[in-house]
Length: 88
Image (cartoon, rainbow, N blue to C red; front, side):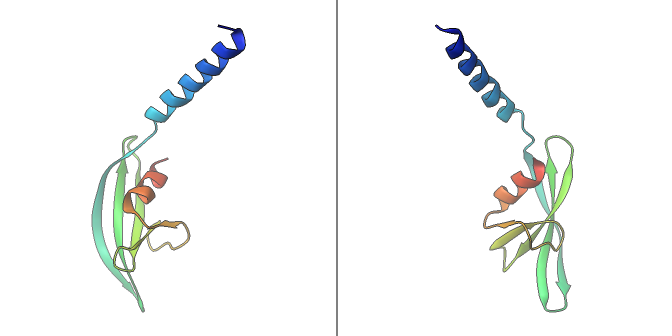
């Protein structure tokens, strides 16, 4: 095997193993339903495998999941995607 090929394989192995150690959500708990004027959303707390906790919000009857308590900026359609984002 050439040296360049060995370096490429080593770099790929390091990248794959680093992804395995990334922080992941371990629990998602409902805290409260919030009514703010005409806006209604649900507040959740995500606990991550690195010990970090973060807030996420569910809007439109849990069809839209956003980062932060009451936030509407960074959103996805799935709870787990948003939870993974806050745990990074």
